[in-house]
Length: 348
Ligand code: SR1
Image 1 (spheres, rainbow, N blue to C red):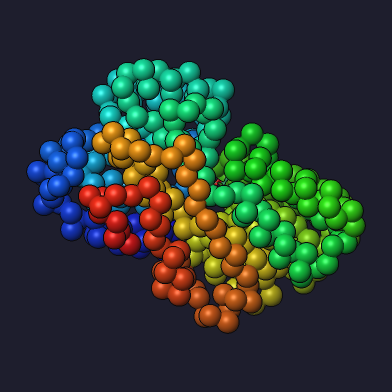
Image 2: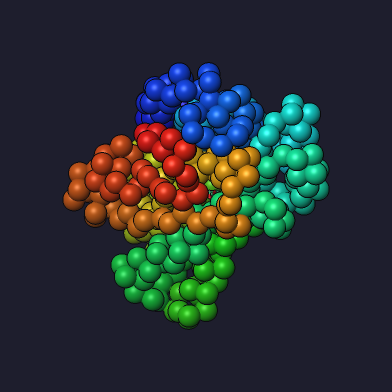
């Protein structure tokens, strides 16, 4: 695990310990069952590896701790059958809430319904379970892709040869793909010369191998749309290995301290990313589950707005880490999405 994420998680945990006293007896003034404490929630992820998912989990843990929730985290191993089995395990554990983070709808929809039938509140992040009883948290993926591609057009015009990194079947990537298709349809001078991508426990290095082959076969590619930071990291690795960093520009999604370092380093081809704070998204997912458990209203769709972060802006602002980014952009570390006055909100 990268040092920056460790530091962040420790800070989040330390901050959450402020609420330990409240946890034992519950939260004064909170609705049942949070007034008594001891609420059990499961976080069931499809992917746990990588900066985004580690920060998402850290944010979920910090919010859970602040709410006195006993959070059971099930590690994601990109295994649909295992994730499905974990939902069943959570039902057997008697949790009051389940947050499902990514995954394949076809292997989750019926078991999620089984949880609902058992009286368990279910919240989904980035997996569309097509169930009106399950609120869906997402990062405004259409806006995220639009901001990245508008920046690409600003930097490169609207006629260029592109590489595109995409794996179908992941809700956020599918939504970003809709915007990419629209962008190409509206800009006929943009030619997609190569498409590749892998999602696994070694996404960045596997994508790097594919990017190397694609860039070698298509030396006229000047722009790569890689809307997931692990994809962008892989493409950057390939560009550096091939010695073509000055000839390609990478536009991505997501941000972490390691990403900021890769974007801002001298000669980096990674020129922009569009991102939310994944820890905030994790905290929001837990709050949505908590509100449902307390019988309070939660919108069917919860959108977290992303921000455009260009290499130029990050360098000019001297930002070197997520913490520094949050200090410059306070909105990045906080969100009032799905909250209530009884929910402790100051986490990071
Ligand atoms: C494989 S899906 C990866 C994406 O999920 C989250 O939405 C992150 O933004 C990441 O880009």
